[in-house]
Length: 179
Image (tube, rainbow, N blue to C red; front, top):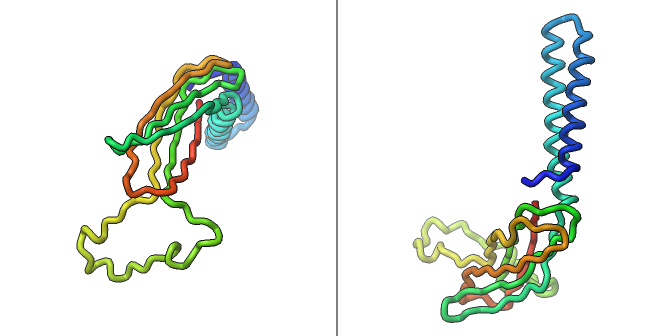
């Protein structure tokens, strides 16, 4: 995780808050209560610091997918994705992960039937292994597509993933997560 100046300010804020709470706890004369107050202060400030790191990461490190295209390679039954990742934030990004989800023949709203939603499986015990094996209709893969991107920098990427031959009318969903 790459820390920005905002991350360091949050760490110093929560450290100062912990010291302040310990100083306030010193006024307690009973030793058991003092140590429980110090422990509670530690838990509260640590939890706040950890959550603030995640929130700051989400809102300071912003990446964007640009010019994403794909094409199938029939010989190897793969699909190749090419594109670019752009840092649209004001801070350096350490790493970007791209999640690609392929959905085979997604259900349209007007053509939804009960058999598409519910499949009875009470007699699965008597089926052979080959009949129990089903082909997945959703495939999801995560790729690291960029590392150490400066603000306004663009990095190209190319990733490959298997494309099952039984897929038709495939829907692709891209999700980029940078930190």
